[in-house]
Image (cartoon, rainbow, N blue to C red; front, side, top):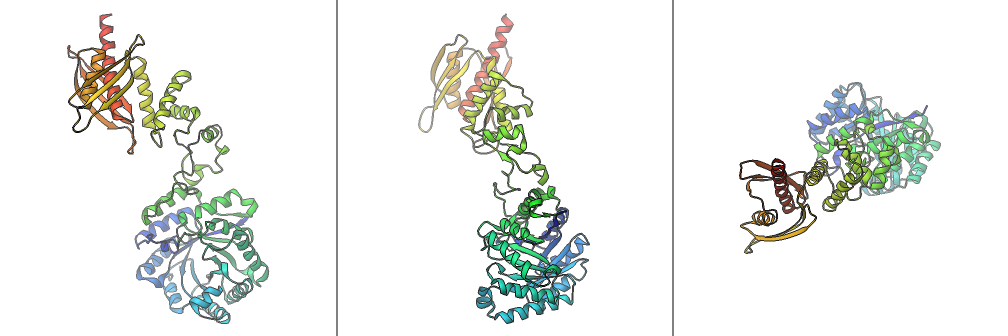
Length: 510
């Protein structure tokens, strides 16, 4: 059986320190409920002494959690901080006070202006004072990542003797390399008397983009708790992202001798909730919860995923609540991906019909970043309309503007495979186009309705035009045309309406 790694969530405390990501007293409990659904072991609910709002948030979350999770409150190594935390946790079933002090030469010399002996004394004193209130006391050795190995071991040994149940080894500035940070944890495991009586925790920042790697290195070398946040929120470049480190442990549990009890299917919900409340968007290529995390646009990748998902996906999207893999249709997509999506939409195309739609798809994809389902339906419908066409569109060009006279040049191919071109003026571009088409087709009609709608979203959306024409006998014929160019859409729609009129009249005469 692998070791259980406790997941300590600090989204509500360190995550809130991300500039622009503050949460109010009403929003924090909402996120806390989602953290409980995830099954986190510890919720660091806030820093009670910092403000009345933070105090109230800790108090409310402490009541909300019941015995589902430990609720933790942060303090400095100051008695009034600890008093405030204890008061906020008064009715908590599983309370923890998280107190500590800086231990690196930089922090002791420049921030605290104390000696090593004074640092040890204050560390012991704050743990002993917190111990009067709660049994579960966590000590953080701030900036441990840049501290002296031997001195860090001395501090940790002293606080464990004073009653600390958890010792937090943070890489506060994200400075360490994974191998060095792992070696630091291993050093403590081998050189601190009584280390077996406390849980070793790691709290890593992402300043060099290695927070997840640092945390995993700590676990590999003996840490049994990871401090992390949803979406990797936190000071500066953020903290270890919970979704990343938990899924990494899930994928490499045997190698790390580790597992967690997190309900990973709640990750997408948690990510979107935190993003919505904080206003901090998640980058599309973010691991696990990004919009592109399970999306494939390369034809080679799409073909592999369609044959067997794990050719390019190491995680089943359903395992993190993401539904299923996404085949994103772009100009890089191949026949296999297009055929798969068409089949999902109910279209069974093979051979030449599929090739025709694929050619139209590529032409459209070259104009757009992504081709949507509605685009595909329009392309298939366009092909079906062209199958029975007496006239097909070869080209159209419009010249218009102020003070120019609208002019349209239209080239059509008829049933005899002859290509005919006509040019006409009009009161507007559509009027000029219709006159040019009529000059070739030569069928009496009145254009009685013209409408345009966007088939898909975005400025590069496919536009679908619907045109209705009325024959001299009063019969009405509808034509539709879809293209990224509204002039082309209009010409296709008008031509389709006239083709239907001609087919109908020929059929009646026959």
